[in-house]
Amino acid sequence: MNRIRLIVSDLHLSRGRYLSDRTKNILEDFIHDREFSEFLQYYSSGDYATVPVELILNGDIFDLLQMDTFGVHTHLITERSVVRNLQRIVKGHPEFFEALRVFVKQPGKSLVYVVGNHDVGMLWDQPRAFLKEVCEAHIEFRDISYEFDGIYVEHGQQYEGFARFDPNRPFLTRGLPEPVLNLPWGSQFVAVCLPKIKQQRPHIDKTRPFQTFVRWAFLHDFFWSLKTVGVALNFVFQTLLFKNRFQVRGGVQNTFALLKEVTIYPNYDKVAMKILDSRPDLHIVIFGHTHILRFRQHKEGKLYINEGTWSEVTSLDLSDYGTRTRLTYVLAETHDSEQQAGEKTTKAQLKEWKGRWKPETDVL
Image (cartoon, rainbow, N blue to C red; front, side, top):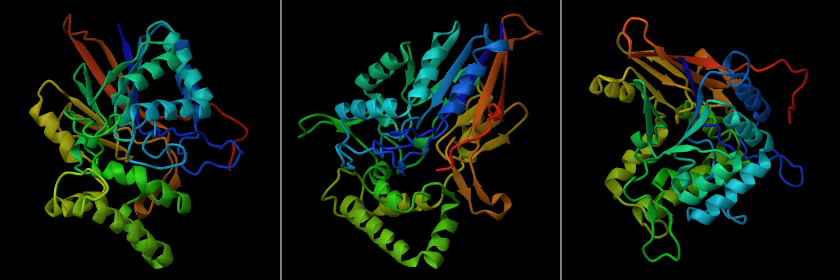
């Protein structure tokens, strides 16, 4: 019997495309609710109506880090604030969540959620219970990774020091009225500083390679660049050096290692190959997190795939220059082996959802 699995990541849903006064929400990266709804409709009807289909949400589905709490962008994220922001996300994306509800109610359709760094708040029980209530269905949650039929799925933040959370100590409780997330340094920067910077230059976290963008900014946007560097350095001094505002472990020695990781955006090719070499039972590794599409063959029958993002990406690389959005995902299909009874074979393909033809779409 065939079984289909769809893997998507890095949707980054926030409060919705428009705020309550109908002005554009600059911090919203996901504007493809209609396309996502059509995507799930396609894989739950027609030829797929009677086929078991599992949707794997591979991290950073919700951008809980960059959402404010009563107008304040803070690193002090509690379980209550995560639920409150999930409520705002649901309100801002009714079509998205209606699509999830309809999908999981179909026979043989299921949902798996792998936690990423932007939605690390989904480690808590109450946000998970709230999402199950919204979807009106069971959801299987995985804190870090998910394995099936020789395929390893992980968001990927655990391989970066500035984004890695501690699975043994995900929450801070000592001396606090209620637990807060034990955020790594990079996540604290995303929660506190990045939203303010994006309000001035929304494209800053959507441009690759980042080193090229930094050089371009200093040449063509000098005064803003200088101001932004000052904000970043002030954050570094307060966190990693003086530690007078945030709870961050480590000293000056690993400060520069963290900054080096931030400036060199990873592609995870070597990480994936290492996993494939160390695990003979695996033949495919799937990551998200980097927003960079990858389809690499390591050895015969061994693949690394990165499903990319549904958010806008601007490439400054001449080989791929321009701003574009690609609704990419991984389609993994498992079926019984014809050569040997009881064995299964799985193949995975990197695909792009083109959607249905539509005569118009919003520009602003």
